[in-house]
Length: 84
Image 1 (spheres, helix red, strand yellow):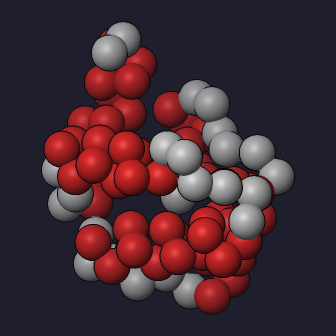
Image 2 (cartoon, helix red, strand yellow):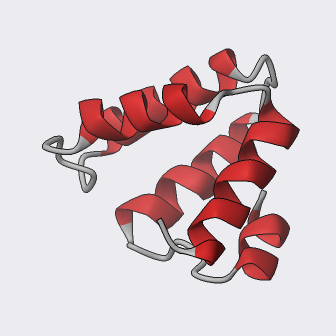
Image 3 (cartoon, rainbow, N blue to C red):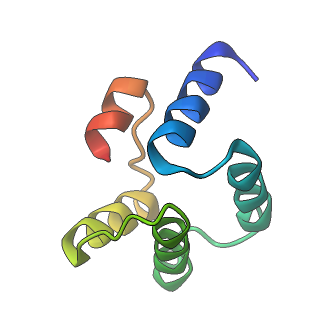
């Protein structure tokens, strides 16, 4: 894993209380799922929110789902932090 990826993973782990291992398990589980399918993505967003014990508003959930479906995920650490 490169340095940027490590920084992102550590930041996520610190702010969400989800371990890197759990993140990898989720990533592995969704690897072959259709991330252009709204119900699949919405289920994933809700699962992550629940795991992190951080409820999100319906508006924020919609924004995240729309971004994932439209492949508009932030690519830099700064933009990722602003996104969440």
